Image (cartoon, rainbow, N blue to C red; front, side, top):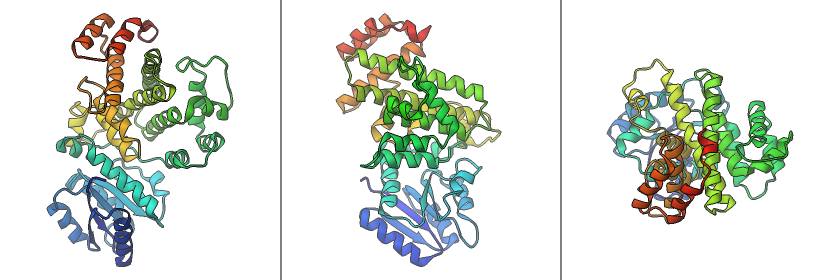
Length: 385
């Protein structure tokens, strides 16, 4: 794990020691600075270099942890902001956006610590420029991490689960259930026989695509007060069309089903950042960082990668989100191939590049000959008309 530095604020000296021991047991290389005093905390935040994570207890004598983290977002927006709390209902009660990036529930265990610190370390390893990280940390429309998404992620990552368990969790959100059924019956994914069963819909979609769709819907739900339903519906349809095109292109290029589903998910999740930008555009806040992001200095895909990494998404997905608008590629040959495929589909669907012109350009840039051939063979009309 990449070395990270954390400042922890809690007025309970015993809990501070427990936290420090637990963190060091799992991650000996983490640089931990602890304090029980709010004034010392502000001094540490302003004078300590390269802080990656700020962790504050919610119940503090002078001001609560939400207010502390809100001030952190303006004083130093670079570090990830995490709240230590015994009441996880706070995550669904918070109305102010962009205060808390992550929660550490009491009582915590090593698995909870590992999830938080691995995400922070992975975020640090992504190729964000320092000023871009600060702008992302100051976003006025950072979505609150949905508890239902955590439930689903825990299930999918466990060794023992069946699709009925996942369907049960999903069914807690009627709007998501309805949309999953709609997509499982839509032309986007090519299923012929209709279904009205959420269990069958989950089976059809698979966990990779299901997580991507659920994430997109939950982000939109987070901003339902600022984004009209018809606007979100339009964006979801655009995203589903793009994702379906990417999946079909990958299929024609001979990619296996697992890779097709991964590429579908990356394409769909690229619109998470778009939803956040749309929400931000509705805000009256004139904060300099927020305005810079709204003006497009930080791309929607970078916003998607930032949010999704903090929500525990695979680093491969986040790297693809950050690189899919150019042909630079990566040191990983597989990722470069995926990146080129996403780039090709984006150029034709959104930038309206003529396929033959794009093929000539890709040929000149050394793109895999198979992908260049598929550009000529693919039925683009189905997705661009």
